Image 1 (tube, rainbow, N blue to C red):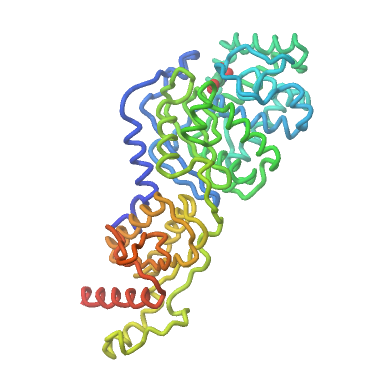
Image 2: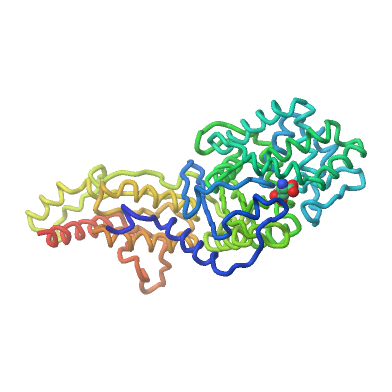
Length: 469
Ligand code: GLU
């Protein structure tokens, strides 16, 4: 059977394609500052996308656990902002990109860590939680509950990684004591380091990172559980800092090429967020000189370029892409006219088949996420129709990726003995010249009125009946 109903969806097939392109080569090194990270399988690759309605696409090693490491930094910063308030946090942690390595021992002229995404700022964020709850176990329990709420499932600690971090953390300890000597770190430096290493040692999968990213994309409401995990103002701040400081010294290149707030970790994970739309989690443990996953970065670059995910790719997206959804039986359009050349038997047959024609009335600008949700609905209801009519009358713009997704879907429908008819009076899907319409490959049925669409749909049902005898 075609991939319309069973097998991978168009999006999954595309994600697999990304994996195949990104797995080429062996560039990068495993993190080796602790033995546990140097022991992981360098060939693993996981990729997940969490959509705003909680649907998660995942491929390959999306169920392989790895430690979250620095991808934890925005979350603990969010928690510090929530507990202490913006003013108190801003007095002690800056928001300026440092352009330095993640573990640089550096502060600004006010002796504040430059931002919460480098270790100094992250250790200070963790220490602020201890100002509210000085007991490390209890502070960690609360942190864990928060991270789990963002991921939509209970996360656990990798105690081997944690113990190893604790044994080898001289540099991070130095940072904590330095911040104490400046008077900005007020909790116990040892407790702050302990809490920081526990947060770094939490085990996640790319599904988790995608859902956490999806929670941030959704203004703080977890798309899976529907529960609010983070306040909206905190989300806005966290995404801003991720945008300018999330990818360490590679931040500028990242913003221009990928254009998504993101955070990487030396465990090999990257979380990226398209505000209002989706969260991405990717995992591949080979790292570049900045400590970012080589293949993770490559995958994000491809995803952003191919799917038009750059946050400044401005479209008037409407959350509700499918305006209405019904069968031809519910429509008040009479196709039973003499000019259709139908015999009485055919007419009778078609009257009984009107509920096998589904009409999807779409609206707004169609970019990847909107089109994805339309095609997912098409796939989920595919058993209920032979012909899908996609009514684009109220659609203003269709981007390149969505156009090719419609072509792919139409091809898949054909393979599954079904058909798609597109009503496109203004030529938004198929650009029309003054003299002729150019449906192009894959899109056979593009018409300008619903009446024409219904006649095409009926022609198809009759053809099917003849083929099936
Ligand atoms: N545990 C690591 C450290 O602080 C995390 C670093 C990272 O992921 O960038 O050294």
